[in-house]
Image (cartoon, rainbow, N blue to C red):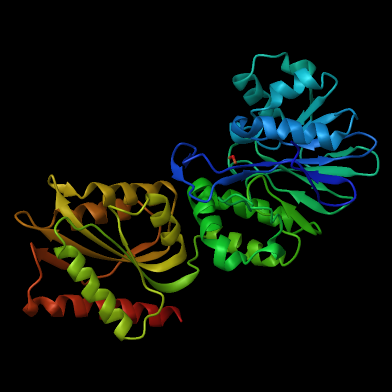
Length: 404
Ligand code: FEO
């Protein structure tokens, strides 16, 4: 059965939701599911913007057939060749043999890598700024390499002033019938997953996102249609501002994130004492996560949000506790920068390993300032060691005051 939404006079949302998939990219938990958006613009020539993941292919093909209502599909614009958006290309070629694929030169290489059909006979190559007319509608192509793969471009409908933004401005989360940002409480219900999506999927490519934002600032945009998540039709500056901050690696919140590991609860006790000291001294919205039971994608997302991070880790096999090490490697690969870090370690027989290894990883990152005060817990903290925790807290508070 069709599940199609009319977006405006000519445009239809023909995407689909997947609430059965546990891990997006077989990596990121998506308890709220995921939406794969695809858009059909009907004109003298009908044009489809991207497809969906194969898992929701049947729904998508039903939607497309219904929205076309017996008309031809003339063009498929491929903005992004990751299989969560391109996996129905071959089916479309069989079902709509007259359809041409509009894409850039980089995309062709990837289509050939993923598919066996005669690609060259099917494609029309477009370049940066090129204009493509379907009748009433004129589309312009804007290259956006590495947002999130090298072939990515975005498509601007000059007629309706709509930006089809590929992965940019997307989010984890199924749509639940509310397609638009003004249908939902974005800040309360979606921001956290939009941040987790951005930081983990595109976070590494801040400068490339900045390039796209610069290009987008030169055009009038009334609506942003991403390939995942909700469609933005007002208050666009809100999400653009978030993207600007995230891609510049600027924190959204001047406060403290504590990421810890604790095998028998002793490091956790110190973390609780420190967070209470900070709270007692007026620091608001402190976040504390146990790395053993928090998915690393959430730790990454929170690390992009907060200005100050406390890493409290146990020594394990003469190294850093694996979940903390995994977290550190992840934020390093995602190019997180410009944060202030405090380190707490716990060891029972060889002190110094955690502090040294954490500092080593941080030294390979950009602008990660490590504060002086630290606490090397020997198995468990004693009352007379409270001073160490207080000193760490005071130094963080001082640093936060500098930022306000
Ligand atoms: Fe949603 Fe990079 O694909």
